[in-house]
Image 1 (spheres, rainbow over the protein chains, first blue to last red):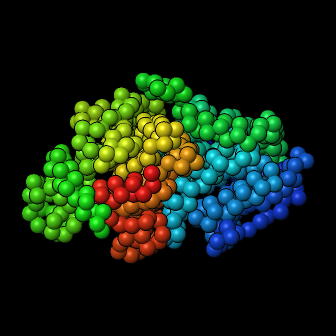
Image 2: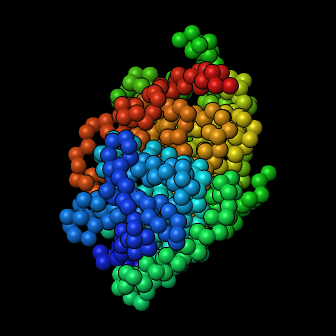
Image 3: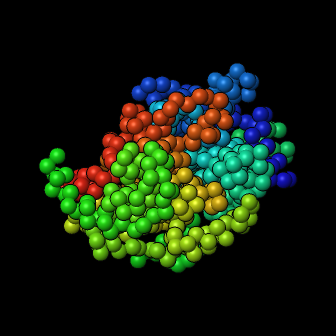
Length: 274
Length: 277
């Protein structure tokens, strides 16, 4: 399969979205709304559900399948209110000791004037910083597109895993082409250069595991895809439930602090600091 | 302000010491003919229209640090072409050429004193691949912040950056998390963190450390935002009002505490340091 074919699979309109997974792995899921400041961001679903016998906070980018739903969900591109809603739910989780599952599936944060006017940069910056302070276990999974700061704003976790045909990138191939070539039609070359497939991301040490998808990709069998995702999420969550808050926070800090240590840039990269 | 008067002499001394920069013959703000010596004495701000020229890391260090106090750290950490990036230009060549030109990555950091008070200083350099956040940049920032947090030394950041560096792929994106984790340590340790946003500050740099200062100070006319105006227009076909994403726009939208001329920056930082330590 070519890199571009994987990008198309990751974005396939029949690919399962966050709610398709959440409703399968936590059938009693209750969606909660609003950032308690000004709005509810429909590009991010958030709520609580019982998962392996434990109340769990679920967060996930949500895309729409029909044109009407896509518009309503803003193609899974969050506004500042979405990051504030996510943090509100993270504090809910912290208050009650619930673990957090975050499903990532976004081309990026919304590149529009309204998002800028309401402080999208600071909203993402603050979310990324705050995730390091949340005292409960967090497991994140990239289920489709992991695009740029919009994805990372929901991707600071103790473990991060990826579905086989998902992508994770510093910018969408179109945005990268626009930045590097000043020509967003060079997206295929950009995708090849970016090393954004799950195997490449795993090799860089940025995620802990790639979860195989059913035959014909997740789009072909939602139940089997949800079962595989559920098993992997639970396997990563279980040991985290044994750690206390300070251990969790230290491990999360170290996970991102030394995430590039496989690169071995010279000299003295990695945990040893003079 | 009396406090600003007190520091004025210091400004003039610093201004006289600034390294030379390449200037156009006429000011892009007002078209007036430029005199290097006059501009240099005014911290590279046009005396006629107030246009703020972009400065490299070496000039910012000279502008902020007391003469002779700069102790640069981790200058030997180098970028790697980890994605074998070849088109349209090999990344390795780009980096090597910039190093030959005397630039040393998109962020330089170290310790110095400002008006006699010890600080950690980090400054982006827009001339190095658009001041993009790279692994080396992230590493220098995180190490400095960790040391500032443990020693209780105030941290001053000067940003000028297009965001995360495409040529380092997802690991460049991860620098946002790495650096913000360290910013959290600064805040948790009660260490003052003053962030100065200069033209331009965008993308992953705006969406990480640049807007997380205890006090955010923007330079007049600087463009600051997440998505650049070209991409916003492409994506939404929106007409953007004039002044969109300017420093003044960000002040009006609550993202920065003030828009401050460069000639007043050093005395203000000195005063803020006094008030917070």
